[in-house]
Image (cartoon, rainbow over all chains, first blue to last red; front, side, top):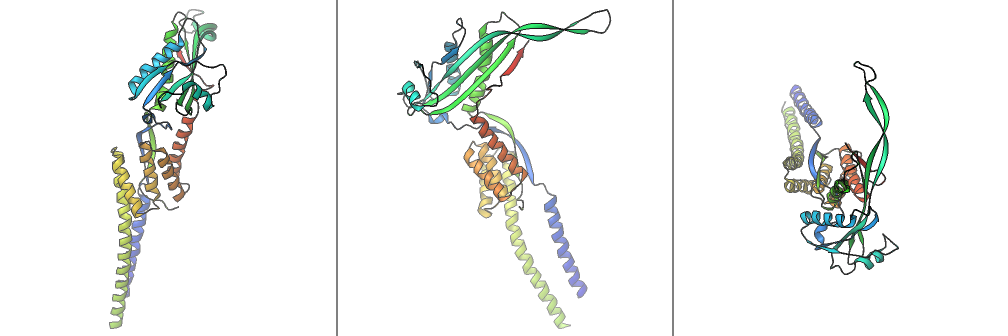
Length: 229
Length: 131
């Protein structure tokens, strides 16, 4: 009888041990890779219309109409992504700029029908910079080549945009972002448009990723069981 | 002899009761585990609504399930419900402090929210060389 009791006791302990062991050995988490939307505090769906204004040009070449290029570019891009109404408006920028002041914005964008005002400042410059380069040359006949340093010139284009999204009813700044992109090219004869469109596209991608919460692949952990603290 | 067999019967009866109680607890536990795993399966197959349903079920049975809170956080993040996701991750971390997986998820969402508030490329122009 005693032997029987002992065997029952042993069986219970063993089965409990096995249960604990199996629960300890099983996987506790799972790494998943999925497309997660980017974080944005601004919901464009809440706005029936977007009013695109002229930009305040801080620096630009006289032979390149930066304002026209920026507004027409963003208008065309917004048309593709935004389902609401789109409008354009010309504003007269005052001398004194108070970017964080609601009254300043209200004075500029009031009565725009409850829409979202898309505006900002822009500067675009192209300059020639000298950079140190190396060129291979063959000093004597043979397999060995030497490199000689020399100064080479490049055109460097820089586009800076400060984008403001303003609630026209209240003058609240809903989004304020600053972007600066630079591009260097060896070809001197390249027109300014080339650099501009490449740079504005880079900025647009970053801005639209944020505005339209475009998804990007990310990794997260899912837990398969509860842990004891 | 009779008393010995009575004792053995009593002993076995006692153990049967204990095993039944343990089994019912295990059943509840396994129900939690099943719901958790079905949710994970749904998430893996991009059925996030389904996953949310199962993880919410887990919280109905076991409100202090860190796993369900964490997984709901991931699902809400996937749906773009940032505040809800943040709350779930924080709740999960409260329930299992120093859990590296939950910490990692929370760190990522916080970074994402912080990055969105900062200006981009300011002072650090991304130079693109075109040859």
